[in-house]
Every structure is written in C-alpha cells, then in structure tokens.
Amino acid sequence: MMEVNFDASGDYVENINFVDNASEEQIALLQNQIQEQQKQLSDLEQQQMEKELDDYYAQLEEDRQKEEEAQAKADAEALAQAEADRKAEKERLAEEEKKKQEEEEEAEAEAFLEDEAQTESESEQEEDTEALEEEEPAEQTGSQEQAIQLVRDQQGISEDSPLLVAYDHVDDSGNYIIHVYENVVDNEETGEEHTATQGWYQVSPSDGAITDVTVDGY
Image 1 (cartoon, rainbow, N blue to C red):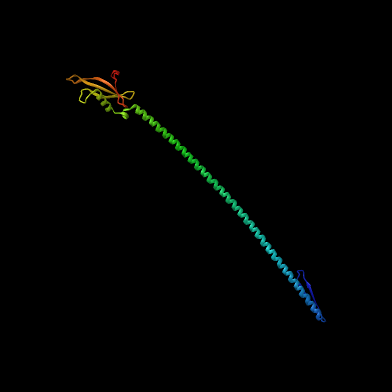
Image 2: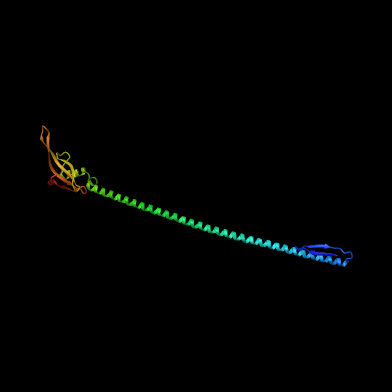
C-alpha cells in the first residue's frame, strides 16, 4: 500500500510501501489521490505566479507614478525658473531703458544749457556789435570820404580850390566832423604858414544831413 504526505512547503512527498496483498482497487484509489494532489499543487503554483505578476505590475505602476511625479516636479521647477528668468530679464530691460532715458534727458539738459550759453554769447556779441556800431557808425552807415564829398558839394568847394576839406573826428553822437580850412603862408622865404579855418561841419552818417558847427569851436 502507498502513503502520500505533504511537507512544510506544500510539496507532496511519496512514500510508497507496497503490501504484498494490495488489491488493484486500492492501487487505483491511491493513483487518483496522487493525481488530485498534483492538480492542487498546480493550482497553488498558478496562484503564486499570478501573485508574483500582480506584485510586478503593482511595482511597475508605483514606479510609473513616482516617475510621473518626479517629471511633474521637474517641469514645475523648470517653469518657475523660466518665469524667474523672464521676470529678471524684464527688470533688466526696464532698468536699461530707465538708464537710457535718464542719459537722454541729461544730454538734452546739457544741450539746452549749451544752447542757452550759445544764445547768451551771441546776444552779448550782438550787443557788443551794436555798441561798436554806435561808437563807430561811419563803418556801417557811411565813409569819411562820402562825408567830405557832401561838404564839398554843399559849400561848392571844387577839387582845385585852395580850400582844403578834411575829416577830423567823430563826435559823441557818432557824427563826422569835417574841417574846412586854408593854409596861409606867413613867410614865403621860410615857407612858414598857418591854418585858417573856414568852418566846421557835422555830417550825419545815417542820412547825410550837414550842420554847420563852426561856432562850437572845434
């Protein structure tokens, strides 16, 4: 007769003790028991395999979730860094624009001051020119020769006349003072002579007006 036992791991152990007088029916029964035990062992192995597969897929899912979480965290950090970089760049550009505007305003202020200084300098030059014109109007409004010719024409003094017509000076009002005189010989032997004034005439450089100022004693 054959005896069938299971060890601690669930594997079966055959321990067959044959009895000389075992019947065919008893042997067939034992064989059925062994087949049934083998079937049970197959089911256990299949369950164990399924459990291992479930554990494997569970581990894969856990790894996948961890990877997705890590990727999501990395994406969030990258997005935050990109936003920080964009903000920093915006602030840098704003600072550069502000600095550029300040430099332009400073340059405009300097240019304005230079223009003011130039305008003031030109104004001073114009005032100096006007003052010079007032002091020396003959250079702007008429010449000494013209003043002399006006007096000659008015007094009817020709070029071959013994009377001499000469420019003397400009008075305080800017008018030409023309001297009409004659050289009188006092000593023919020595040639000594003196000047005999015939008149003094004031000529306006602006309109050529002639005024007899002999009485002023020039």
